Length: 120
Image 1: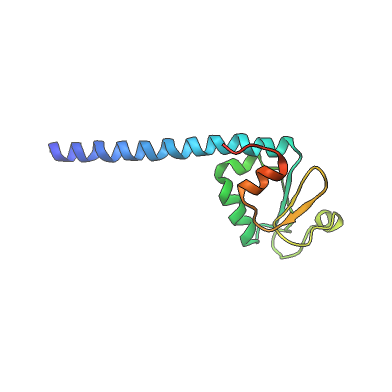
Image 2 (image 1 turned 90 degrees about the horizontal axis):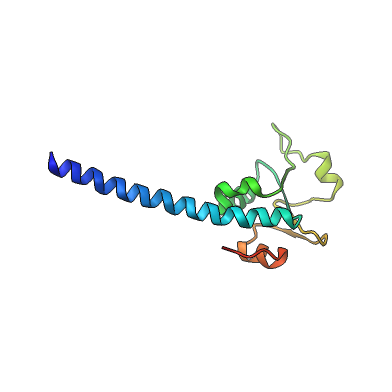
């Protein structure tokens, strides 16, 4: 019985450390994602785009703070009229305040440099 309690305590300690590590990373990226929003950086993507999913994964839960424009029309691989109208051709497409666009999955470092937001 004693060894079971010790094993449970060890598992609980590791689970707690893992959880706190994820929260710390998420909170650091929250500030970065909010900075991107304040600098008028936008990401155009589509729900069916694997590169968009990769880009979202880089941010994890902090992606909720990134201004994101969904260009996919549910149930099809068509692009929304709004995205066609602004000239989005590939996904993901990042647009910066100066009007420059970059296509593809971008590193946090590149986003930081282009937007002027410091990384945690």
